[in-house]
Structure formats: C-alpha cells, structure tokens
Image (cartoon, rainbow, N blue to C red; front, side, top):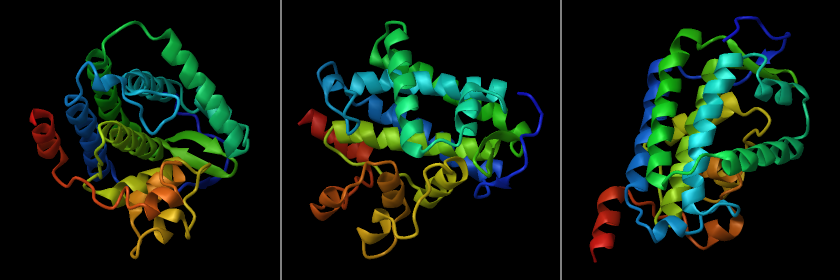
Length: 250
C-alpha cells in the first residue's frame, strides 16, 4: 500500500478501532462459511435476493470481491477502485460500473465448486483482516469531499460479508441477522459515503424502534416496503444454524 495522502477532504464517519471492528468482520466470515455449509447440490442452484445471482454464483462473487479488497489495499490510494470513486460520479453510475466489473470477474473465475469458492473467500478475507491494522488510519480512497480510510473500507467489507450471509440464508428460505448490527451499520457509514444512510431511512420507518440492520438492508437495496409490511424480515433465526440443520434432517 502506498502511503501517499490523497487530496484534502473531510473524513467519512469515523471507523471503529481495529479490535472491535475486526471482531464483527470475522463474525461475518464465520457466518458465510456456516450458512454455506448448509447447502447441497440442489440448493446451490437456488435464487438469491441478488437477481443476477443464484447461490453458487454468489459463492464465486464472494471469492472475487475478497480478492478485489486485497488488490485495492495493495494499490491504495491509487487503486482502480480509488480512481473510480475519485470521479465523484452519481451512485447509480458507480453501481452500474461495479456491477459490470463483478460480472466480468465472475465470468473469468476459474472453475470450482461452491465450497471451494467459499473456502477461497474465507482465506482471502482473513488475509485482508491481518493486513489492515497497521495501516488503519491511512487514506484508502476519496469520494467527492470525503476521505475513506483503510479502517473505513474494512467497515464496508464487513457490511458486504454480512449482507451476503443474509443473501445466502434467504436463498435457503431462512433469515440472518448479525450479532452486532450497530457495528455493521457503523462500518457501512465509514466505508460507503457514496451510499449514505438517510436519517429517515426505510430501516427506521419499517420498525417501531430504529433497527440498524434493517437500515443496512434498506440502503443496500435489500429491504423494500413490501417486504417489511409482509413481515418477511421480522423473525430472524436467532440460532439459525441449529434450526436450519434440523430442517434439512426433516
């Protein structure tokens, strides 16, 4: 990682100190691996909430993105991701460009089973976690007037892993909720200034009391008014691994 400072700008929402933030990050990797272990040859073909991916494709995407985060760290603050964010483009434009990148990387990914992709994801994501503490407060990229530090980008990665754990759980007809949803929301805010969480987001409106996990689901496009009204997300599996395993034995 280059230690050059990016041009002046305000910092994004402060990233959590490395130790608690990385605990939430590691919990996301564990969740992805545990949920992935519940799939079989048939269920890996299930559709996920991401309309472009079935579960086995999401496994490959996770592997690609974990490798991308390591690449961005290698080249920060002048990585291809940093150059994209430096354009200050509208979030919709950024989303389309990143979606094309994701599709191209998935198409070029070497053949492998979903389990192999998940194992490679976990190894790459943990490698990233081992690297970031020493450079936590250094600039990673800048979006408009906001500088995102390495710690902030780690928060974004943490949110991404938890969101994809939710995607995999939903593909199995279950729900998932991180143990420390407030930390996940803080990570999103620190690492994703181009997609801010509004103070009156759907995540706040959809429940009687403000729910940080619903806020993350909402800002990532996963929680809609219809889903909330239908109660689809109101009964998370508090001990989902055991319950899902019982369901598979039935």
